[in-house]
Length: 340
Image 1: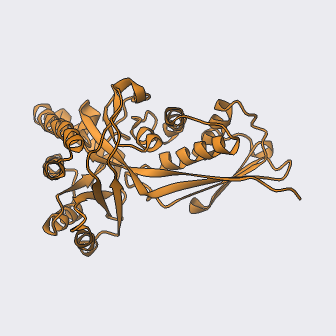
Image 2: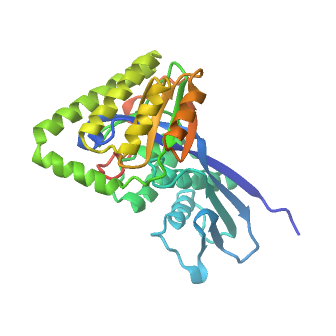
Image 3: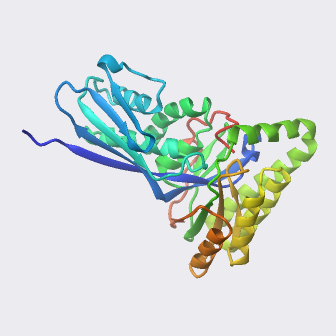
């Protein structure tokens, strides 16, 4: 029996730093990769005639592509495999076992679906000794994201495929952001799913009733995103923390926070976080806290004591000079659900 080739690839999660909800209305937002949680995809050569088998033990799913299994292109996992093999110019008649796992929490605004797809695209290319640029990976993942979200914004696939902080404006441009000083973030998971579609819909209804007031709030949030980008580039993390605090207060005015989210934010600030806010759609999901190395442990304990189900720590290291707008501006179609 000959040796079977086994290939493994990974992809991180992502978190929106500032700009939720306002980005749906044309204002900028900033998102960063979360490298301490990740999706893993493994490809192994299978016996001749097996076809392509996809195994996802986390969700107790097993798919057989080809033959009696057909080609279920509306399944995100199957769609990823089919789209990638076609893009690479390879036949779908392969004998492979593809296993996907992830420790990224689902429905918490951490990009779990895009991360799984990114890991799968990367592992298939690597298994056949082919190279894809981050932009090509992002493009393929975006097509799969359309199954999850209909018309996704491109936020998740761009941040995860490039694994760099991104500044984006819905429907316009996406730019990577240079970081001058290490950003230490704690992500406090409430354990409650964030009902993105419902929250976004509620904000839209309120916006229709009070457009002037809501447009003013969105303008303020957009200005915060611009200033946070500048703070990241200048290494002014104290200013960045203050801006996160301001952003959370504005999100409270949009009525997308919750008692638990506010409690976690308050606990983080009381223990010395430079800034803290909810992240994502709200009314569940996560809070993020910007911390110094000296206060990291205390803030983590405070989040757990205040009711966080788990705390994920991540760092965004210095580096990068940013990129021209058009360099990674693919796929920023409008989407209420994906861009909060």
